[in-house]
Length: 112
Image (cartoon, rainbow, N blue to C red; front, side):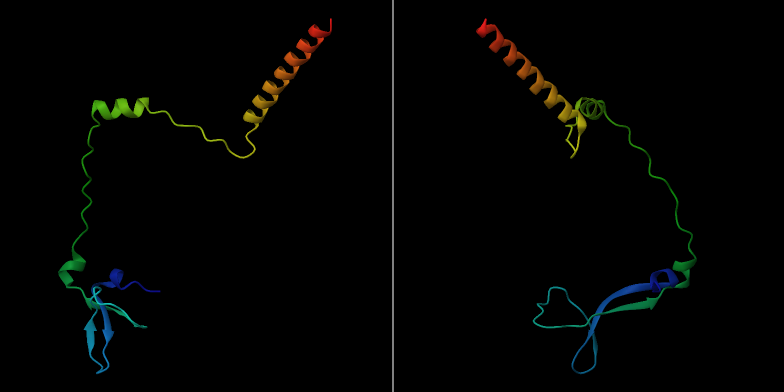
């Protein structure tokens, strides 16, 4: 699809055709009670607009204030577990194993 904006045209607005056949600019505040067909209307741009060179001026960088820097430095990100995260499973197994070992040692001590 061609882009009229790149081909030297300027967008004028959205239009619809009345029952009389007149093209009328669409007002988006108008309530719609049925199907409506809107058409984009373009006009040829002035030659001065299309030949003007685009400006490439860069925006000056703003320095961060100390308070912003300190805040970002101190903010800690929460770690979110991913499905299949082996580290958490390994920790759970180690804790469960240590608990079972302690329980077994306690039961042996009571039997003696």
